[in-house]
Length: 184
Image 1 (spheres, rainbow, N blue to C red):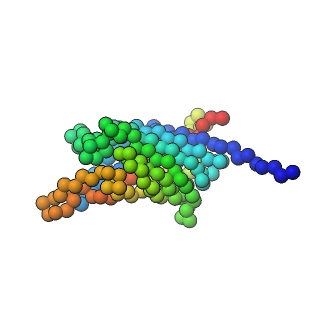
Image 2 (image 1 turned 135 degrees about the vertical axis):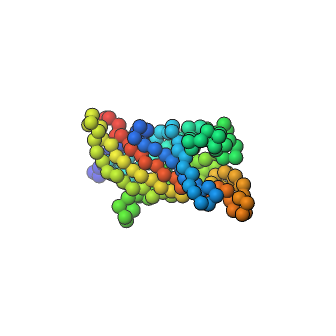
């Protein structure tokens, strides 16, 4: 008689006190504007403490956006950009999380901004495992991905006096994420 092994699932929650989510975009094609989101949560489900093939779900409160300038934040939260009144959440759900040849991971999944869902791919560096002062298991990751803002309906298109776009189309997403293993 053949027996089937049941793999134990492990759940990890994002530790928002030790994580950050940012975006970077060129302004006037000469300098970089950095913004961040202050309120987000997520969960990682693995078959073991190895994260390969993990399932990742992540949600950001769009209204938690800050770029350290109130007038710009108001514009970014408006209909021209994130339209937070009609689209209060930005979400991500993984499809694959595979080890890369260079030692980290390649993360693929569906990102939804302004109600528009697109497949994206990110490079993820694994920082390793450790335990905090209370003995809680933690793991750390640094994620980078580049998306086109137009793919997500962010079509802001003012031009400079020279005819260039005021805001670049490409947006760099960066996240430094620490996850905590749920207690059994």
